[in-house]
Amino acid sequence: GLESVQTALDLIKEYNIDCNIQKGVMSAGCFKNDIQDFELEKNHLEKKYHYSDLKLINENLIKSEINSDMYLSGLINMGSYHINPLKFLLGLANELKLLKVKIYENTPVTKIVQKNEHMLVHSNKKTIKSHKVVVGCNGYLDKLLGNIRNKFMPINNYIIATEPIGESEAKKIIKNNYAVCDTRFILDYYRFSEDWRMIFGGGETFTSSFLKDSKSIVKQRMVKVFPQLEKYKIDFSWGGTLAITVNRLPDFGTLFNKKLIYAHGFSGHGLALSILAGKLISEKISGN
Image 1: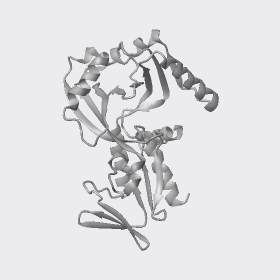
Image 2 (image 1 turned 90 degrees about the horizontal axis):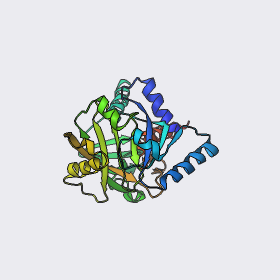
Image 3 (image 1 turned 180 degrees about the horizontal axis):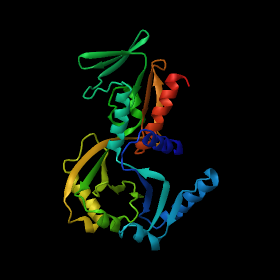
Image 4 (image 1 turned 90 degrees about the vertical axis):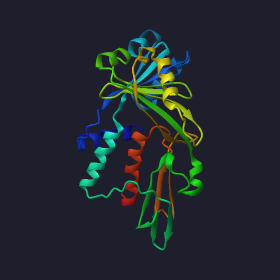
């Protein structure tokens, strides 16, 4: 986990990727017993792993950090960060283009087969021949790898972004600009963007179909946590599919005599863990 975060930080620094990196991620406790769970986790990580970047927030202090009546405690991880993920992705893509790597958008892969010593990747009317194939489709894997798909469950998640509310108003809501998630089973998670919009995620569907009116459903969840945001307009609303495994750990593996490598099931932690997956896969392919 720590290596995945450090690898992402190293890439941002090495390639000077402007992605609004901010320090601090908080788990906000909705239930009375959460404070004991947070204490157990903090003590365990300190004793077993010598990890000292966790800070416990009790009931008296939580409201000064997150201006909501929902929470009774908090655990801040100062070894975690939040970023603009699209800017990070585009920064990596630009580096790949400089290395003459070809990126083909709008090229859905319909079938992958082995033929003699090669892999054949079929996409509409075109076929790509290669020595190795890496499949990193996560929640969008569909039936591409047959019953490998049974290793995870796709879950649809929904997000809204308000109009910009300004830095001073934003810091009245989240004083230190942390990213926050709560402790419920179907959780809320949120942070401020670099232009001070509240980006708020919440609500999940466990079917293949998307909610028709996710915008109003997520706004209701947001206003329950922050009634003071009700007056602001919702500028953007979207959704996407996560791949959740039973043990919440990603699923890596190989097929076709190790000619195909797959990595998926990041369970909501793909921003860091998929970076580590890429590093591990490149090491496997190079034999290093």
